[in-house]
Amino acid sequence: MNRAIRILATAMTIFIGTLFLLSGPGVQAADTPRSIRLAHTDWSSSVASANLVKAVFEEKLGIKCELVSLNADKMWAAVAEGKADATLSAWLPDTHAHYYEQFNDRVVKLGPNLEGTKIGLVVPNVTLGRLTAGTGIQNKPYMDIDSITELKAHADKFNHRIIGIEPEAGIMRKTREAMEAYGIEGKFRLVESSEVSMVAELSNAIRHQKWVVITGWLPHWIFARWNLKFLDDPKGVYGKTGHISTIVRQGLQADMPRAYRLLDNFSWKPEDAGQLMMWIQEDKGIFPYEKALRWIRSHPDRVEKWIP
Image 1 (cartoon, rainbow, N blue to C red):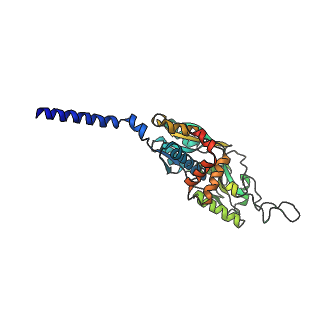
Image 2 (cartoon, helix red, strand yellow; image 1 turned 60 degrees about the vertical axis):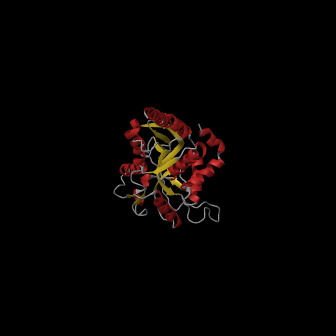
Image 3 (cartoon, rainbow, N blue to C red; image 1 turned 180 degrees about the horizontal axis):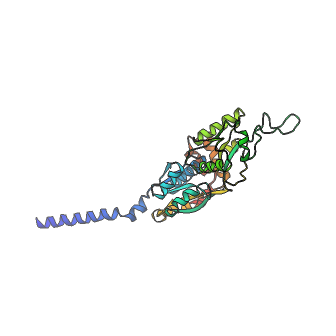
């Protein structure tokens, strides 16, 4: 009986030891790579880049990727707190400067993934009727305004409103600064809404040739859809052209080196982002992942350069 018990105990020890080895981090990391969480905002450019990188993770690297949609402030906080692994939507050096200042010691900045961004106040540059008259002379736009300094004189035509997006967005913070700098905070109200609502207001105003001013940014598909222009900003409140950076949580490089390298390698151009955003808008934004797969099929050489 004692011999049987010793044999059973030995067998159990070997069994438990084997389970321990199989559940160790080395085997788990090699066989079943953990999923990665990407935080993004509801901006068209952010949705496009997040879905594109998600598609590369899942289709090319076999790494499950979860997208988390958050307002800008919560997006930065999620990466800093480790609740998200990365974001591709850090607008620097101006738009998200206050977020970077708040969280820079708790995140890792991988650098720009898109160069040539711009933010500011945007108005239609659309003519009344046809672009040219019968004589061949080009018709003038129905809104004869070029600078933020001119807003105050036309406040009634704008119904005393600047159409914005969610209040936590960096461009809203800059717009509040601009309203104070140009002395129009008493003449205008900054309307808090969403990107979808803002674009709907813009579309309706252009259709009925009404005056409208919105918080706008590049890259964005609306600049391909309509003829628009940024109002001059002589005080430089909105800054100059910038870039969108990739931000990751601390420890990601050690935890998921292949995922880290893909995020570090990812970069594209404004025209690339514009193309994907237009494709996404074809279906009113319902199938962004499918459009990202289409973009991957159309740009195999570009995608290959990102893969570690």
